[in-house]
Amino acid sequence: MTYVLKPKLHHPTLPKNKLGFTRRDYEGKVSTLCAGCGHDSISAAIVQAFWELDVQPHRVAKLSGIGCSSKTPDYFLGQSHGFNTVHGRMPSVLTGANLANRELIYLGVSGDGDSASIGLGQFAHVMRRGVNMAYILENNGVYGLTKGQFSATADKGSKAKKGATNTDAPVDTVSLALLMGATFVARSFSGDKHQLVPLVKAAIAHEGAAFIDVISPCVAFNNHPGSTKSYDYIREHNEVVNRLDFWPSREAITISYVDGETISVPQHDGSIIKLRKLDSDYDPTDKIGAMNAIAKAAAKGEVLTGLLYVAPDAQDLHGHLNTYDAAFNKLGEKDLCPGAAMLDKINSALR
Ligand SMILES: Cc1ncc(C[n+]2csc(CCOP(=O)(O)OP(=O)(O)O)c2C)c(N)n1
Ligand code: SF4
Ligand SMILES: [Mg+2]
Image (cartoon, rainbow, N blue to C red):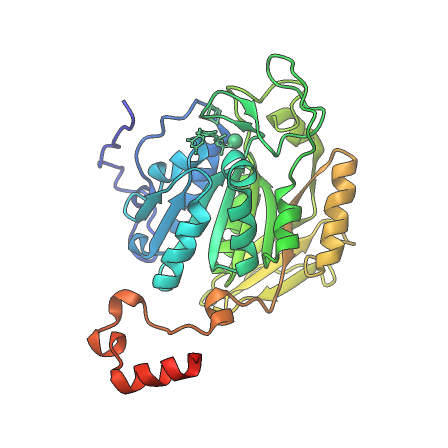
């Protein structure tokens, strides 16, 4: 059986959001992943984030590649648009969809094999182009779906379940995303929903390439001593640099912090990301500082989590290209066929 439908019945007292939807309205089919897989916790965080943001499900397009992680869009947002693409090719399909219709909210879901092994080139280019999306990489250090081979994010010296040692240097996806020009870069842990849910909300609101690498242990193949992507390893080595609170513009800010401990970053849509600093030296608007901090932590075997970088003045691909506002499917014959005189003008400009 490849999928299990969820019964439509639910308890009448489930809380509703401003649209009158319960969390169940943002769920999908019953997950067929292994019990305890980190990916299921990420799906739950995505459901919670969209429910809390009062997003109409039909306004979301969720795209993925191939892998256990890339299967997960079947388990959330069952009433949204979905496209399970080819292994490592989600970014180019997402880019095309986004260029054709900027009115949808784009959610890219991928794995470490999908993004850092076969899809590394696509990953790099979608970040440098600044495609407006929330890109979530469910990082377990292995190819879970094909039974546990090391992926390109496996740390050098880490061990496979049967004892083999990984001798290759890892691809650090947050460092790469920063280098390639992503304007929102975060790392989180599937076991920390208090950190992950606001990060997903802020990534959705961010106008530009928003990337979250979520360490998501694979209980079947990479959750043993010797793995650096296990639940125990991450709990012991997680260095949280900040805690994020996210306010859509229409909500009053109710939480106050002691001055000097917070950073507020307004977003284009009027929402505000407010960060409570846990490391007083960490400034998430300083890109070079973020790269240094990530590299220093990695050298010590620590995993830095939180909002690692956000560019307050971010602009997306449509802004870079100065594209037409309307979605292609809303263009009529008049827009698409500007007439012979205009065509002559365009052709002469190209000569
Ligand atoms: C072109 C192509 N090559 C190889 C495969 C086989 N394959 C399927 S999933 C996968 C790796 C998935 O790993 P990851 O993206 O980390 O997802 P996970 O299962 O760990 O969540 C591979 C190699 C494929 N489906 N297509
Ligand atoms: S094989 Fe690993 S990644 Fe795939 S569902 Fe099982 S625990 Fe999750
Ligand atoms: Mg994987």
